[in-house]
Amino acid sequence: MLRISGVGVSHVGLVRSGNEDSGFVGPTCMLVADGVGGAAAGEVASATAAYVVAAHLLTHHHEDPAVVLRAAVLAAQQQIVTGVLQDPARAGMATTLTAVATDGHRVALAHVGDSRGFLFRDGSMRQLTIDHTYVQRLVHEGTITEAEVAHHPWRHVVLRSLNGDLDEPGDIVGLDLVPGDRVLLASDGLTDLVAEHRIEELLAANSDDGAAQALVDEALTMGGRDNVTCLVATIIDGPEIVADGALIGAVRDPRNVVDVGAVRMPHSA
Image 1 (cartoon, rainbow, N blue to C red):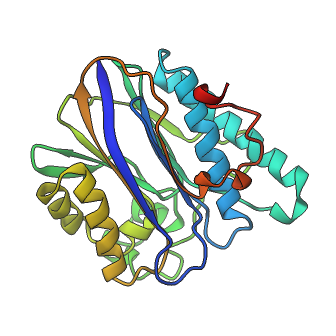
Image 2 (image 1 turned 90 degrees about the vertical axis):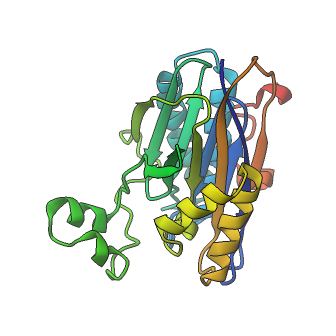
């Protein structure tokens, strides 16, 4: 059976006072969520999305991961709506989400926003996700080039996110992963500062544990302007494991989750 064996590291960075990134790594799923910059209560949005999506995936780990991811994204959107109703000061809160899940045979990815997923296979890396940003739309239209993205004044404008819009399902696709593949999920605190060729070098030179820390350290060396979260995992073939996983970043504080009772992790049911 396919399993996910990985680790995550999150750091507040060198500029911001709080961490609005959240993550989760377990044997059947991994995800990163990044509170959208400039929006209210980003840490609540990311923590709620991470908790709700992880709980759904863990509870339904024997089911088609694409189907479960669709349900999980909708549940996260609903919880963000609830969070704003509970506290109007949270109006506008939103988060990215990039998640990978497996039932042991199939693997699927859900993505919305500008966090990124990468596959590292046979010594080379390729991006699995497409940023839902204004500048990426301009690139697709041919208005600007990829080289111009890093310097565009609107490069951080996110067009799609988990923001309580029940009609936003995210992009959900199947992945053809095999044992030995490595997956990196990262918030833009990494990818805004560290070039892809350097990310690839650090993955090639380190184990999963070492790579996650090395990538965060590299982002800090490059200025650490944002929270940075990196999850690195290897796809392995092994027996089923009954386990939850590791909460990372803002979701580690239950006060950031809108309603921990709405969807319970299996171990707390």
